[in-house]
Image 1 (cartoon, one colour):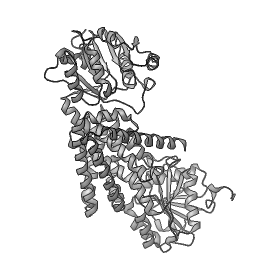
Image 2: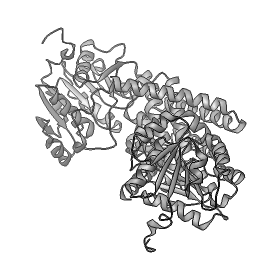
Image 3: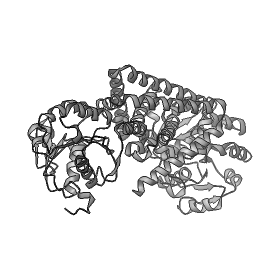
Image 4: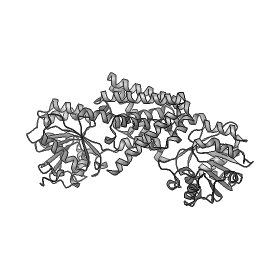
Length: 297
Length: 297
């Protein structure tokens, strides 16, 4: 290992990576690691034989198993790539097979709750490092997985004061080889910001679908409505878990939205068309600037 | 003309169609008519020589001109394909060149205000028929135009009690040859429903961009945020005109949204997670059903 190659930091010591969950995110992670030249074993853990067979068919796993215990015992890194609702059970089962060279991370969409569960359930919480790779698709399952799903997307890592330095380096190395843009912040800052750019937009997309149906207007909807509400086809249970494990920040975000909706309404109601135009001007500039930044990374 | 061929009804009598506005919508209309085999003249009217030259370069116009009067005088159909903010001036100028075989329509995003302006300004308002082809793109200008922009999209036509039957047939024939799905309703019903599926989603996309910036969270935003807020890059002046010419229905839509945001907040605040899940389940079903309907048309 070349010490000057930051992408390889901690990567060489990984003889086995276990990915718990073999859906879109888990299989795309395995495919991405393979495509990046990862030479160790990649083991997929799942609950159903049928899903494991479909994951194996993608050709990126050395083995798949329903036995999480033996997989954890043989691994230097475990990645939870299942819905948030399974985490409490899985962390409890991983705890029983913990060992000195084990690092654990996840791909969950909220972080304060996940890190608190890890602290509560794991014997060595300092070797748990929360991750949130900001990649996804409205498609699901092993068949939708791609080696490039994570490439060039942001990945939030949420180390805390007592996080083990080597564990952090190992988790960084995994996302870095997938060409993700790594950003580090506290679990709370993560949850506040993802409420802004993901959870609130998701809630709003759902409410817009509801209102369009209530207004009997769906048959007139076209491209713009399709874009704006695409995420509303996401998994309801998964999203309920996201909202309820980020309850406080979601409520704050909904309140912030309500205040802006009220201001928009005030502009219309009082004929303050200049203020409306100024607001739309600013939003366009911000949106165009953001899109340009996305293309340049 | 074969009387059994409904797509040709009124189409054969069109010797010249004048399209006022040679941006994305106007040039796409000309290209679509050409692709559909329209044999008459197509004339483009604009204010700037540079834009007219760019439109001519697309090869779909027989002529382009800045002289709206002579173009209107020689036409059997005039289509306003400019921003709403220009309509009052343009309708006034068209009025001075009205003749017995002239039918006028538009592609404006609101209809009650447009139809009221036509009634106020035109000598024969019965030969004005409002249209709203629900097609667009975040791209603009003649270069972004395509012959298929309108194909398979909904087109709302808003005849009123005094609308001339032949005028309505002529306007229907144009959108029908572009393979649009024609829906007819009153201007007021159009405005209420487009507030639901287009104007409110646009306003919300802008507010989400604003909130993401206020929360310093834009660098974490990814695909979902990009989809949900794509329309926020739309032209601010154009959209201010849309909101302000649909003021009453926009205020009603914002109030309906506020009520649903409050209910979403209540579910989170009181721990009514079952109700939240039920709501997301319903939204997913509606969104998936809508997308399936879109694909099947």
